[in-house]
Image (cartoon, rainbow, N blue to C red):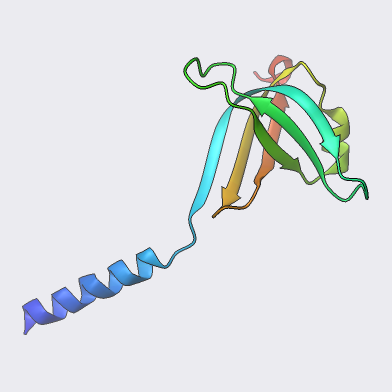
Length: 103
């Protein structure tokens, strides 16, 4: 009886864990290559890559939700950033700091 109950409990936990939403979060230095926004000015983004990743310098598009933050970001500068996404959504900027201001 205990084996059946514990087996059912484990099976239940596995099913619940499998149904969760995959959430990915990344923290890294990013070198900003380009800034842009949509024609209706509702969405702003940056295109950047991780300068410390020598094997794969792939550009990443990150949505910037705050217009004031987007205005302060400069092209051809390196920033320490945190960004995340859920499932197959776009990357969203969570946190950004210029290299000179980090202490």
